[in-house]
Image (cartoon, rainbow over all chains, first blue to last red; front, side, top):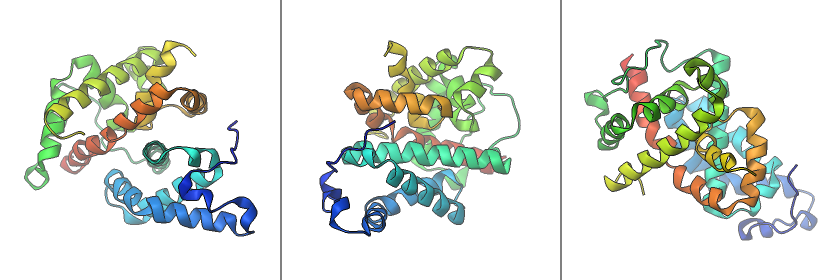
Length: 189
Length: 60
């Protein structure tokens, strides 16, 4: 497992475990102060604005960070990226347990990516939907069959009848092209 | 680690890597600067995809 390093990131170094018995409490509080707000905003997008659920997800995510103290040595950007992946896994697991699926209907045709309706016509959503359509069919398919349907790589591989490794590599190149397009259009940084 | 480990960063960023693969990839991440950089650049994509996903949820 992860070697727990003594040297914590500067944000946390004043929280040296040897400086007091309530180190754990202070560390959790510090994580909330640093990441709680932004994380909640991100998670609420994924939970469909179910605030109670989003708060539970944030709490569980920060608890996992606390249990993986080695991660706290990472620089902020990387730690943030890690917190996001953890929160997404928790949401996906939660959806499974609740049996909630974003879409019950199967067929991932080329046009199954929703065009946002009037109320949702944020520029970003339109640009993203458009960029997805611009991807190759293989690339679009793996994004749809994993992230957009809350399925893991192995589940998507079974449905698509291709090896998990192929799903992983297609996802990789798909995300790279997607990011390239979104960056060009000023939506991604 | 093989080249295929690097490719897992996308599935990891989306949170769709299976549990059994997550721990191994995180060990890889701890040793691979290239993947750490890629993870950061990919980490805003799930949030952008959520916009498309939530509109399709409401649409159905």
